[in-house]
Image 1 (cartoon, one colour):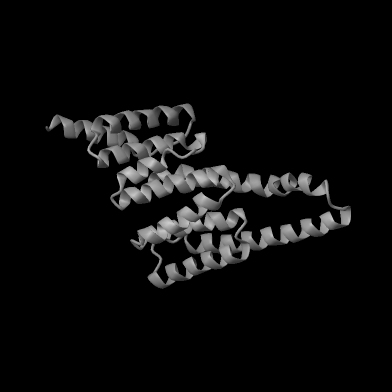
Image 2 (cartoon, helix red, strand yellow):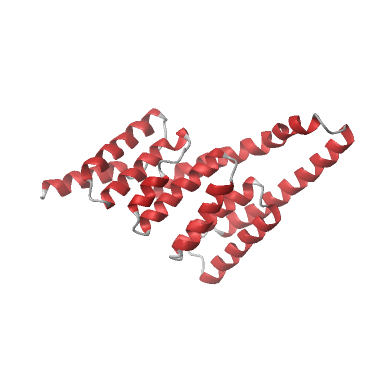
Length: 219
């Protein structure tokens, strides 16, 4: 899962941007048809909802920093994710919590649960980057579930250019699962080029290319 580090770093940037700019973007549309008093009331309500969702999400994050969570703790965290989505389902924090839930589900070998959480974000999110993360991770889950064709289909979604290197990496994994080593090599080399162009860390791809060469040398 090392290749997910860059995803999480970019998610932090998304969260900061949304916290600083999200309300002001909505404000322009609302101000056109609402009085000043009504706008302030609406803004206060939205800010309260965002802060409540943020606090709940931070609590979930704090509980998942330990990679050795007991089964009961995992169940508690996943229940908190459900509650966050029920109470604040339209917030960025609820979507990020579902991404965390998918990771926990994979740790429990609950691939169907992971798919359900990721599909919810992929189908419902209006935030392209978060939606793209969901598609990308859903493709990885499909691979883990032995479905490389489904993974490749998901990688054809309009995934954000910021995740192009990660998409090429997963595409290479899918081609290897299908036994197409030439296509896998092309995909991984493309991933390396994209990562360098975008100045992004991409872990493990060179090792996979090296292993592919070693396997061919023994044939």
